[in-house]
Image 1 (cartoon, one colour):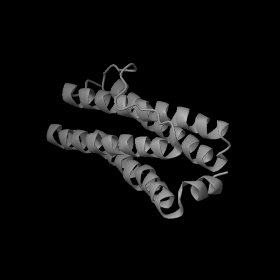
Image 2 (spheres, helix red, strand yellow):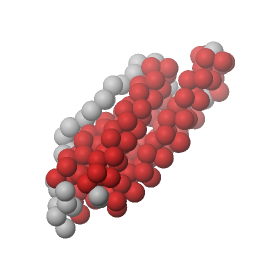
Image 3 (cartoon, one colour):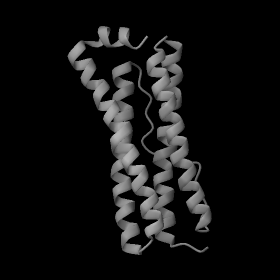
Image 4 (cartoon, helix red, strand yellow):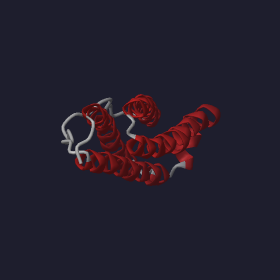
Length: 155
């Protein structure tokens, strides 16, 4: 099927964010595992899998529409050095993904590609309600409990 060029470009733009989030979650999960923070490892490794699933959906849709996925571009990738920096960087990229998703969803509406829009709405819900919300909770716990107590709870 020949898809709309604007939609395909929007999906490629989103793919750059999802791949960056996936890579960032991957390295952060491995750092948590190395530091013995197994609860953080488990959750962030799960987020890595979720992002890989998001990227897969974008790639599948682009291929269906006759587009060529850009697997080289990464947007927003930044590895943290401490747990708070890592969580904050992950939250920042989730906010960026959510913003980009909203823009591409609006563009899909304008281009009347409702199937792609509906797929992206599912990704937006996952990004806002699962990923970003959990990261906001963790940063709030660090603020309320203190970093030492938070880290101890993640072993």
